[in-house]
Amino acid sequence: MALNQIYKIVRHYYLIGKKTSSFYIILQLQMILPQIMMETKAYARALVAFKNGQPIGDGIGPLIAARLMRGSKSYEIVDDTVVGRVPLEGRVAYVLKAKGPGGNVGKPGEAIRQILEEKEGEISRIIVIDAAQKFEGEKPGEVVEGTGVAIGGPGVDKYKVEEVATKYKIPLSAILVKESIGDVVSTMRKEIADSVNDVIDRIKRIVRETTKEGDSVIIAGIGNTIGIAQ
Amino acid sequence: MSKKSDNVRRTQAYFVSMIIVLMLLSFITLLQTFKTYKERGYMDYLSFALSISAITLSVYMILQIKTRPPKTGFEQPEVFTVIRCSKCGFEITRKFKEGDYVLKEADPCPKCKEPTFIYMIFRKADEEEKKRERYEL
Image (tube, rainbow over all chains, first blue to last red; front, side, top):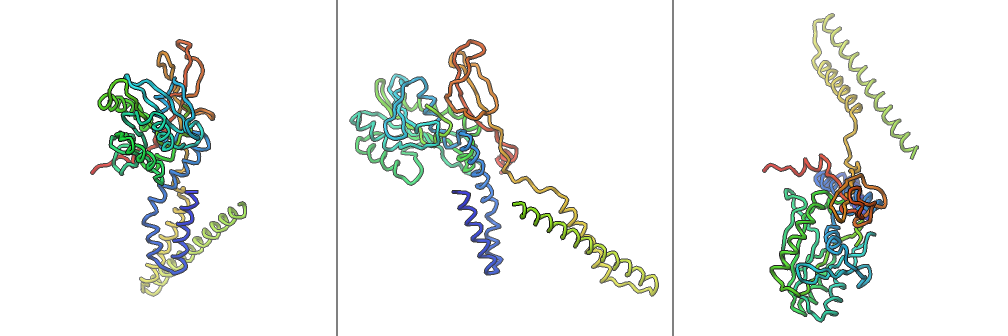
């Protein structure tokens, strides 16, 4: 769909330039062509990744959640979203991700709301892990920390988490892995996959520093879980 | 599809024949210019310059046709699967096979015979990608 959209836009400008014999319209197209090509190559690679069921860069959140959940029992809390109860640094972590290994983003907002309602707000912290777009010149796979709900897209899930976190006054943390637009949709790069251990160390540090032993936390791995099971 | 590729080939043959005709005419003009100079002692600089330019252009166009098209960048990267032993941490890296996914159970560990699982699936960044990321401000 994205490739077709690019094709339509490029054709539009080309035909308009031809129709009006305007050099400047064609020039505009020529000027942004390197960027268009970069995006097109990324989407072309995405086709292969999805066809073969390979994890993509956007799947870094679910990959970290899967590593944390490994060995523990998980259940489907809402459609296409699974939760596992994992002991972590003397606390209980409710780790959630989209149900894999098919291409799926799940409903993290709804899942977090459900857990909070079930626990009646007895959660000390919510940690969200996602991929973030990097600027040119930044290293892919760089890990950064912040505050808030790091969920992209139209904002439905982000709103749901913010609403319920505000209701129960639960602090929010975000851990992001930087990636370029090309890395997000194509098969996961080694540099990005290697950042998993760093992110897990940071999760443990945040949990140790901001919660007490015996507390419960929610860890949400956001993104497309293609090629990643639980 | 085949009709389209036929069209492409025909266009190229037509293009090459045009270049050959252009070169021939340029050589004839050049010879004529020299002949006139020898017989009458008069040099037609305009014809000389035009024929030399036409020959240069023809050679350039022939070289352009012969050069291979640049890489489009749509070549598929190599993807690898890392398998790790749950007990001893022994790792094997092999090429990705269809049906592989992270946390899938794999063959028992060759060292300790304990179950193994797919730990990681990744692609190596190609040279072009790495080159683009090397910045010197």
